[in-house]
Every structure is written in structure tokens, then in C-alpha cells.
Amino acid sequence: MITIVLGVVGALALAALLGVSDAPNAAAALLGARSGSYTAVAAWSVAWHLAGGLLAGEAVARTVVGIVHVDAGATATVLAAASFTAVGFSWATTRQGLPTSASVGLVGGLAGAGVAAGGTGAIEWGGLARGRPVGVLGVLIGIFLAPVLAALVAGLVDRVARQAAFRLPRAARREVHGGLWLASAAVAVADGANDGQKAMGLLAVALSGTASLGTTGGIAPFDRVSCAVILAVATAFGGRKIVARVSRGLSRDSAVDDLSAQCASAGVILLGAAVGFPLSTSTVVTSAMVGAGMSGRRRHVRWAGVLRIVAVWVLTVPACGLVAVGVFELLRMLP
Image (cartoon, rainbow, N blue to C red; front, side, top):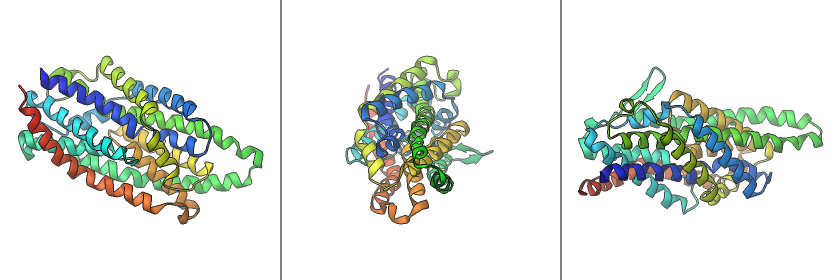
């Protein structure tokens, strides 16, 4: 019973952490372009994140839960260890103002705790199967290729948008700020749909006491609503420092650049949610902003900030894997 409770607490804590570390990136462009106050932007973000979480499917949840194959009696402990590891690591880096990825931390935590519970054979290492992610490699492929795709798409969109905006009257260019509100809503919906499923899948399996999402009958309405509400509310109460880092710490971009980056980010994240790739909003949005900034002048990108964040991403998987082993062993000692 204790392990089930810990699994539930870990899943809900992960939902809150995803709201703090990843979700606020949907508001970064609006604040960076000074299109509204933090209060108004936060309320907008909460509403659309909630909508995304409530409308989300189950493809991402099944991918995440499918990483580990252990006995039903050990599943809740593995999920709890992975969740607590991802939350702890992301909380520590978030305090430094880095938009780290709780999604990457969760993958590392699941792999580490799974190995501790059942050896390397308990992990679905996988790759791609019919264009869909399977196991650790499949998830990492999506997490690391999605930012590249977002940067390329944002750069292309930004070039077209700059040419179009150059021909518009000055008064008409102000409408770009209105477009930023719509693009920010799209990113929030995409993030709620993708990030929300990660916590929903863990919560559904932990509550069921089974070893996979397939045996639970899917994500129950209670699981979906709980995770969606917690993630959405957390975007307003925990992410201001991360928003400041993303909106001002990586590039000196214009409203057109911000609009291009947000549109590219929303498209990539929604595509990932549909296919089953559990993407990191912070990595996708950050890369899209860099791609849009580079389409104008490369010196608009603050490369020191970019490299600092990339270094954290690279270290996340092995660090969380090792920590999760220790956390799992501690939890297994509980009665």
C-alpha cells in the first residue's frame, strides 16, 4: 500500500513539476515581446494548458509506461523512484534558472529504477517501430531530434514572416502581437496534451496496481482531470524564473521571431503527442527561438546561454539514472 501511495504522489508531483519547468515556455514569447502583464499571460497559459490536458490522448502515456517491464508488485516502486528522481533533479536545476527537461529526467529515472528492479532485461531499449517510438531509444530519438526540427521549421517560417512583415504598413505590424496570443495558446494546448500524458500514465498504472497501462483500460477521467489541473495551475505559480530565462536569456529577437518560434513549437509538440513521442516543451521552444534568431543574424543568439542549457540536457539521463537506482533501493526497504 505504501508503494502505491508513493507512486500516486510521485505522479502528481511530476505533473506539478512539468508545469513549473516546461509549461511556462508557452508564455515566454508574450512576456519577451511585452504583449501583456505576467498576470494576464499566466491566466491565459493556465486556461489553455488545462484544455490541452483534458483533450489529450494516450499515445505518449503508453510510450512512457512501456519503457519498464517488471512484476506488478514492483511497478509502483519503480514509477515512484523515477518520478521523485525527475522531480528532484529538475527542481534543483530550475532553481538555477535553467529550463531543464523533466521529460529527459523521467526517462533516465525509469531506466535506472527499472534496471535496479529487474536488471537490463526489464528495460525496453527499443527504437522506432512503424514510425512510432518504442522504449528508451525511441523516446530519446524524439527528445533530441524534435529541437532540431523545431529550429529548422522556425528558421524557415521566420524568413517568410520577415519578408511579409517588411511589406506591411507599420500599423498592420502591430497585429503580430495579437498573433502571439494565439500562438501561445497553441503551444499551451500542445504542452498540456504532451506533458500531461506522462503524469497521467504513471498515475493510472500506480492506482491500478498492475504492470502496464494496457491492463488498466486506459486513463480514467479522474487521473486525467487531476494531472491536467495540477499541471495547468503550476504554470502560474512556479515558472516565472524559467520564463525570464527563455524570453530574455537566449536571443535578442523581435515579435516576428517570437511568433515564428511559437508556431513551429506548437506544430512539433502536437505532432509528437499524436505519434506518441514524449517531448520536452522547454527543449523544443528554446531550440525554436534559437532557430528564429539565427534566421536574422547569428549574433542575435546568446550562445553562452544555449551551450549551458545543452550541457544540462546531456547530463540529465545518466545523472537521473544513477540517482533513481539509489531512490529505488531506499523505497524498497519500506514495509
